[in-house]
Image 1 (cartoon, rainbow, N blue to C red):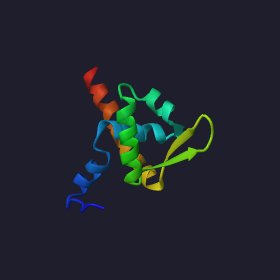
Image 2: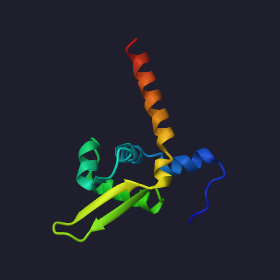
Image 3: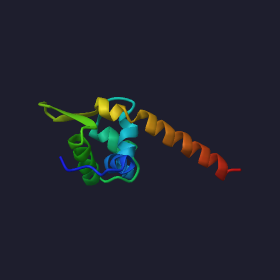
Image 4: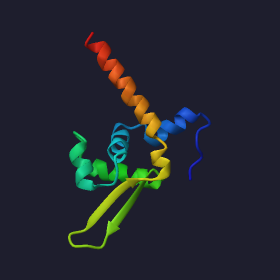
Length: 106
């Protein structure tokens, strides 16, 4: 593993600071999903980018990937305990976003 920055905020941003990763986390907070379900629920992400981000998040220990030996192949993604520990962060982002949206309509 690479050496981590001294700043904990920088470490957090390294792990989830990209738009797609946060949206993947959002989708998996509700439970296990297949690739197509994740892809269909995240507006604007390409299959290539989604695959890349899922691999990075698996490597970082945030998600589990389970491939079933079936025809057609089935792959499911879920959050690890480490990934689930980000729930309060996502809840805070959601709360802040709702507050901001409320200010814009005032």
